[in-house]
Amino acid sequence: CTNEPPSTYGLNDIYEQSYPTNAECCKAYFSHQSDGFCYSKMGSPPTQAPTDAPTEAGSLTVWYPDYSKSWDMGVCINDAPLPSYATHYNYPTQKECCDNAYSGQSSGRCAAGYLG
View 1: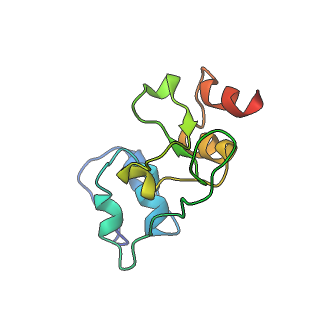
View 2 (view 1 turned 90 degrees about the vertical axis):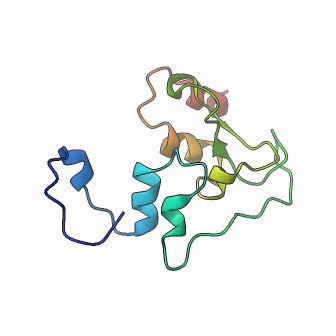
């Protein structure tokens, strides 16, 4: 992600979208990165969210996408330990996680987790 003018490398239009912050760009394009490389290039990279108090389903206070499953079967979990990629992709509620990580999921698998 950069704040430089768009390149003319012939990439399709998806790469020419803009975001108000570098963090939002990293989240949109590089959510699959397990090492957080995109975030590491920021002047002040985000830090890991607190994980000390338990919640109803798991043991963390944040929810994160479970990337061990295919996107269509993906769900948000709050199991410890927090994976390294989830230090950048975590949300205060399961719904917010699903809305961000699995928006448009045709199976509805993630939403089923918080809808009951």
